[in-house]
Every structure is written in structure tokens, then in C-alpha cells.
Image (cartoon, rainbow, N blue to C red; front, side):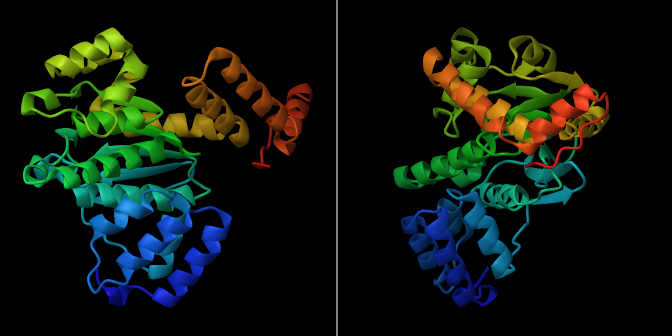
Length: 325
């Protein structure tokens, strides 16, 4: 990627407009510094754009820049599928791959036709086998922190997105791969899947949120065991632990994700977003605050046209026609 790909005047204007609406002026300024380099690094760029998905999508659209070398996404009605296409490296997460994934989810955030996003890996061996050890081994402490923040920002963006994320785990989901799956709303695993956080076997710890999400998903005791031993779990055990929602034959993962997407899309879109937001945000709040948060969302949604349509359709015994308003 080089400066010739960027219409800096147009991009700067868009950043100026957006920073008044949503994004941090500090982030906007840092992005412009990166873009003004003669040969800006995708890693440098990702450090800042990963903090604001809308800004990311707008900038990349304006710049007409598509640097997908390790991932692709296909968007269809109700479902978009992101495939990590680094099969020879078992889809390992290098800084460039994390950058591309951040970019892809930012673009899809603006796709109104795809409320559900499925994430999977190329081939039949791995979803994501982990972070790229070859890229990590020579990182100094500051570079390691930056890489950890990149991965953590990616996972946080998925977890807090208005979209619904499904991890279609078609093989190894280890280390960073398990952390990416944990950030998704649903995890569908193939019978060949193996999940785990084996970082301690390499003398490191999870860096993309694994130490925090794993206990929240499967409970503290089981999580501590997996974190301390680095043990892999097969699909059937992962299901018992609550680490995955369902186990299917490998060729049924994406068809089942499609079924889930269609089921979710048939519901009130605002209601789906609010229900999941209340559950995710409420888990970090005391019960009385979480109930207050839920009550306020309940009141807010009662002002929507979709709420009135849903109740009217129920009483009239017909299918509701929701409009996301």
C-alpha cells in the first residue's frame, strides 16, 4: 500500500466530518499521520483504525484501498462470511491478518443486508491455529503490547458490534484462534475441532482477551485449568463446558450458520440488538444496575415502530414486517 492509493484531501475531509460526530480527534490525527507517510504500514494503520469501525470503513471506501491478502468476505442476504485464507500457515494471526480482519468487520458493519457475520478458516485443518509465532518471536515489549492491543481491539469490536457473530470452527482454534471464537456471540464447531489456550507451553499468556473471556464463558474453575495446563479440548468436551453452542459435521457448519442467520433476521432487529446488548453489558454490572439497564432498554424499544408492528402482527395472527425503526 502506498500514498498513491489515498486521496488525502478527501479522506481528511471525511475524518474531520466524522470526528465531530463520533470518533476521537486524537485517533483521527494519528490516522492522518500514518496516511501521509510515503509507504504507510497496514500494521501502523490498524493500530488506530481498529478503535473506530465506522471511521475505518469510511476511510477505506474513500481511499479505494483493498489490501486483502489473507482473508476474503462474501456478503449475501442476512449473512456475510469472512474466511481467513492463510491455509498453509493454518490461518495463523499475523499483524497483517489482524489488520485485514479489522478492516473486513468494519466494512461489514455498514452492510445493512447482513445482520449476521460468520467467521471461518480456509481448509479443513484449522479455524485459526493461533497467533503467528514467527512474527511474534522477535517482538520487543512495546511491539508485543501493540500486537496484543490490535488483537484485543479486534475481539472487542466483534463482541460489542451491532452485528451477530458466529465462529464456524472447522479445525484447530488455539491461542488467538480460541480468543477470536470467544469474542463471537455463537460458536459452531465441527466434529474435528480442537480448542484451547496453549500459550503457557510457549512461556507466554493469552494476549487477545483469553484470560478474561474464558472464565466468563465456561466458569472460573474450568478456565483456570485450561489456562494453566494449556490443554486442548475436543468438540464434544467443548460442548459440555459451554465453550461451543453446537457441534456439526464440517460440511454443515456454514449451512447451519445460514439457518441461524435467517432465524435471527426474521426477528425485530432492534430487539435482537438490545437483548444481546443487555446480556453482554449486564454481565459486568451489579444485578441492580443490570436490571436498571434492561428496564431502560425495554422502555426505549417501546417507542419504536417495530415494537408496535410486532405486537399488532401477533394480535392479528400474521407475520410481522419489521423495518428496523
